[in-house]
Amino acid sequence: MDLLNAIRDAWERRPFYGYRRITKELRASGLKVNRKRVQRLMGSGGIRAIYPGPNTSQGDKRHAIHPYLLRDMPIERVNQVWMVDITYLRAPGGFMYLVALIDVYSRYVVSWSLSNTLDTAFCMDALKRALLNGKPDIINSDQGCQFTSDEWVHYLQEQGIQISMTGKGRCNDNIYIERFWRSFKYEEFYLNEYKSLSALRNAIYDYIEFYNQQRWHQALDYKTPASVYFEQESKESKVCEQENNQAIFY
Image 1 (cartoon, helix red, strand yellow):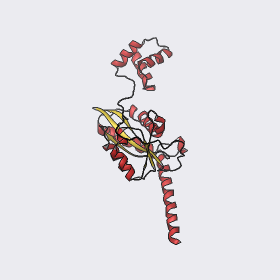
Image 2 (cartoon, rainbow, N blue to C red):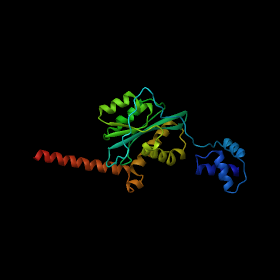
Image 3 (cartoon, rainbow, N blue to C red):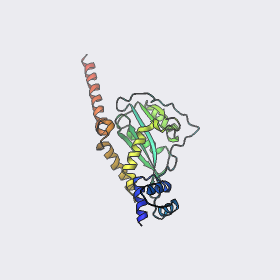
Image 4 (tube, rainbow, N blue to C red):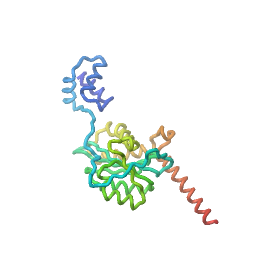
């Protein structure tokens, strides 16, 4: 039991460690143990490394790929660029898929949607609700079939939104949404168990509210994403109003 507790402590510090790395960790702390015993105890204790699950970014060769538009582009205002991505979540009964759109300048999560399938419909739902907050100049995504589908592409073109796509294997091209996934998983998802899909959905809602409204961001000079997003939106609205008033006056 003492060894199992030590294994669990090591795993909780580094949940991405498998039995080989945990064995190294235990040996470094002075315990004499072999990896077969660690592997057996991890199995009996239900402890396993967090590892990549289903591929959420499978492309469709029949769909057109769009160029990456953000290289060397300065991001200077809200609604200039949004990023969208899908991540998987292990849930009761199987995997669930979470899509979110984030404003790059403010890090504000403008919309999200949860589904048990990887169809385009739940991405479209998130997109249409996001556009109730504002309209970006560009939306950047990976080359997944949801984002190269005719439905997604035609809708963005109808809205006058430019389409940007990351290069294959270039996860840094979509870095801001990837950082959000990391924050969500390490600050919420990996720390809790969800006994139902409604509990998972409520936890996602609560975390995104916290992330947008309360979580201080060093990159934002310790402001919250919501304060930056809506502060600049308000400034831009006032500028437009002043310009309209001047036009009417003249």
